[in-house]
Amino acid sequence: MTEANAKDYWESLHRKSYGLQSVGYVGVGTPFNAWMYRLRRRVFRQAVSPFIPARDNLEILDVGSGTGFYLDRWRELGFRSIHASDVSEVAVQRLRERYPTCEVAQLDIGDESAPTLGRRFDVVSIMDVLFHITSDRRYERAFANLASLVKPNGLLVFSENFVHQRNPREAQQVNRSLAEIEFLLRKMGFEPLARRPMFVLMNYPVDSTSRVHRLCWRALVLAMVAWNGLGAVLGAVLYPLELALVARLKEGPSTELMLCRRLPDP
Image 1 (spheres, rainbow, N blue to C red):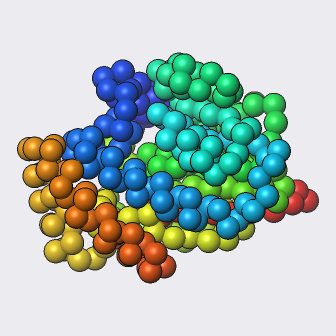
Image 2: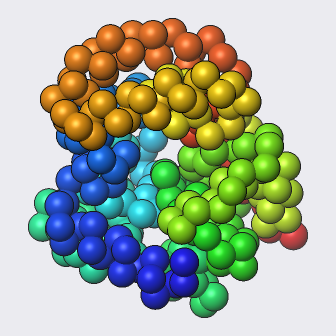
């Protein structure tokens, strides 16, 4: 997918239906996506809190803010100086309406020219965005741009799939390996600090070698596509199991969250 097509893809989704159904798992409906985001909220808060004990006067930038889900999470954690950004004009406009006290910029993190936001930030988050950058050149550029936005000794918080096996490239998503991502992080001056699963059962098991696991997930998706209301029941059943699994496992078969420290400039 080209740069222009990627931007058009997100513009089209946001114009059609601006909400969880446009930024979440497409097709399964709002009920199940609501449970997925409830799980994201718990994992994010538990993973981030230990690494940022002091929160006074810290500046946060969220990249790919979409509907503002992670802006709300930063506010819940006690931060006040929060900045938003998105590649979509629709998302930027809606974010400015919903968060009038928040500075919102239109930003393509994979663009060749470094972002010019006029400052660096103590913490930068970019959640469920990077695996949608299908160009390898733009993917590497995204990490270079992120490095330019994070202060020395600041934190980068992001989600990726960190696969351990080869995966086919898709039109809107590329799943890259843990080794490739860690190589880029170190190349751009980041030190990985922690990684933990965000999902085990409630998302496509992209990094699972179990054919049964994949078939079960596809069956669940087909059922929810046929009847979105089923997602409310499935989410309620799976959610407590997910909480136990993501707390226990060090790696998961799906999306994971990683925290990195920006090393001091040479």
